[in-house]
Amino acid sequence: MTTHKSHVPERAKKTNSLINKIQTTLANYGYSEIFLPLYEYYEILKYTTWDFRDENIIRFIDRNSGKSMVLRPDFTPQVCRMVSTYMRNYPTPLRLQYKGRVFRNVNLDKGLKSEKYQVGFENFGSSELYGDLELLSIASATMKELGVSDYKIVIGDQHFIQLLTTIASESEEYIKLLTEKNLDKIKHFTKEANFSKELSLLLNYLPLAFGGCDILDELYSKCMFDKNLSERVSYLKKIYSLAQEVESLRNSIIFDIGETKGAGYYTGMNIDIINYTTGSVLGSGGRYDSLMNNFGQNMTACGLAYNIEEILPLYRYDSNAELYDYLIVGRDNFFKAEKLRNEGNKVFWTENDNNIVQLKNRYRFKNIIM
Image 1: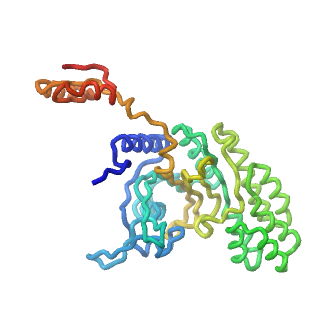
Image 2 (image 1 turned 90 degrees about the horizontal axis):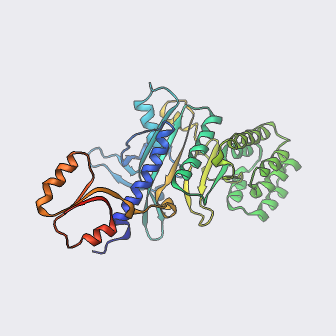
Image 3 (image 1 turned 90 degrees about the vertical axis):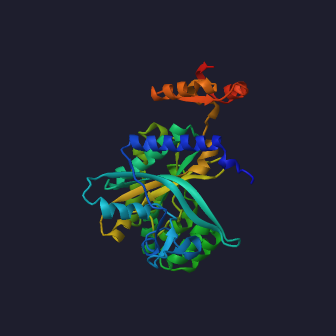
């Protein structure tokens, strides 16, 4: 059997170190860890999971109950169910973190399934403004703790998109074109539709609304014709202004107001942490205030999940720097090693001395007893 590189101890140690640093950062913000089942009822996830389609999931039948089950494609609905079932009397804000694998179909032609390891967190009960601000703060704090600097936090806003679709007729067609960023067809669409001049200008501009805070100024000027739209842009401007008080966020935020990913799932700000060299998505999340209604509770909520495999190449970790208190050599010293461990020491024991040089090259030892 060929050993895959992901199975070697060095990669496992690096992965565990990465996960521990993320979880420690979350704990410093007050997030308590919970454990979640690997699978969930199909009917629970069907109406609560973003982009939930049969071709995107791994589905099976529970032979005991006969009910349809799914390997989880998303943690958030599971957390919501746990909160609504077991934590109704917990004080808010309720901050929870979790880790594990999610399963999604990524290659329909070949029938391949994909599994991703994620560490994530959810915040229940905070106000929208400060919940969103904390989300951004944690995202930047985590990247700083991991030593990752080659990233940007890309902010979209599904509430703005939803407001826009209530104004524009044939909004489904426009959202499709906006998702494709098809500028020519959008221009043709707005020309053929019976839109006001102000709305047409906004619809044509939205695919280009990508960049720094100047984007919000331009967007605001184009939304003056509608109070709800202009107020929503003002909210984003306020978020950006407050974020400038957080040092690690000052040069990290860019906006993509024409982003439609998660429409119908997110109810407000949504973010992606992007490695701007490779384009890989290091983490994703946002606000989903209406999701808890599916579980019988009216509660604000937002969260984010980090993609561990995507972060791993950017995380610097020296497995050779692992430090032991003692290297104990020789069969006669087996029980001496046990005694030292019982005294609280970290001990590496080996039967003979024929590989001492290799061990000293591979590990670090404070003391050596032969």
